[in-house]
Image (cartoon, rainbow, N blue to C red; front, side, top):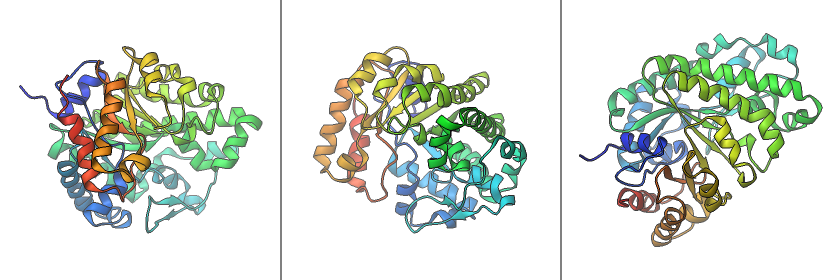
Length: 347
């Protein structure tokens, strides 16, 4: 009996070998919005359109995972900042941004109210859309909702440049802020998990190997990720993690996060990742979204995908995935070939 995309991905998370290579984008919100012919601002006010876009694009793209709310991650900070005058800035291209940063001390953390999450209309649109998308296609696809990782979300509250400095000057503040964000994200996901959501999707780009070193990663980012994944496991829910940049010097730390899978940036040595993580943790990689998927021909995309699979994907516990979220201008033909390689690759 042919496995569904959802079953294929869950088998990979369990370190198994499904009938074919699992394949997914990571996020894909910007591409889907452009292809569907809408905007982030329009979707933020229209549950029905967000649901229809996700369902329509899932059929066209054919990824095993469907990511509802991709691109709306900043609203989890915006919601708590509204009482301080913080808002959202919609852009012609790209995800909505936060207009200001408003947490600078442990005293500021104490003033934050997690219940403000559910007072934000955009968050409720995404939550309801996630439920409806899961109802419509959740038996076929693994449906999830996206968020920033705790370390990245904390930096959104504080401001990235200041947050990086605080890892040296105010490490206790950074730890407390990141831990607060882990709790905030658990609170965000709890109603969806109670309704049957099967996976969290976490992007933690500020924990990039290009921004923090392995010691900082272990001190500030890993404990909060583990807090989220431990909670998810207690609910029998998976955790999908992506971190940007070259993290080849800290691969063992991804095991420490407790996440179900780590999707690697194109900068990571995928052969080394297989050597360290093979048989221990499901991992995905790592076709370059710009250099390959955007700028190469369809035949070159196929060759790049096959090379990654040959190096890292033949023993199970592997997912073919771009090295990051994809630009909205990638040709559909290249995206189709990317998926075709995996969908037709039998173990």
